[in-house]
Image (cartoon, rainbow, N blue to C red; front, side, top):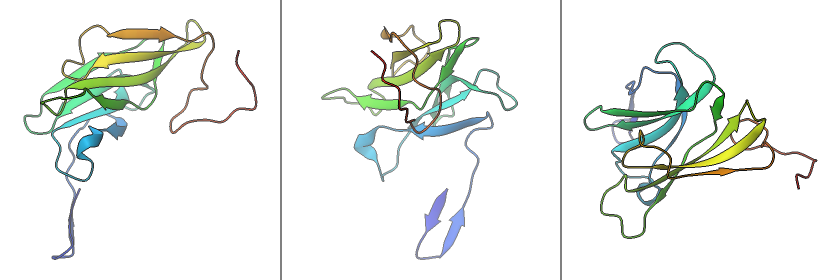
Length: 144
């Protein structure tokens, strides 16, 4: 969406037809033009379904990279962490909580921001699950 305060107009443009939500960008460029978008999306490229993948979209070229966690992995909101002294906007890590339906536990997965389709850099297996949801959750139960 582009908002022209002087002209008092709003211009909307669809940038992705795949069902997706909760985008992340490099936090060093909040409020400025950006090229790369990291966003939770569905496993299939059409229709609405649970989010089981992370999509990287290059807004300049339209190129897409997708990292899949299906059939039993369900993604939370991605977080982009830039590398120190990075020279490109996507040079960093994408952190995402994954609910593993087979194991009934959660994993923190770290992906390469420059090449999302590579194997994860690391997968940290939690001993329990984080209640699946977007925008965080609260629970009265303590997990030890």
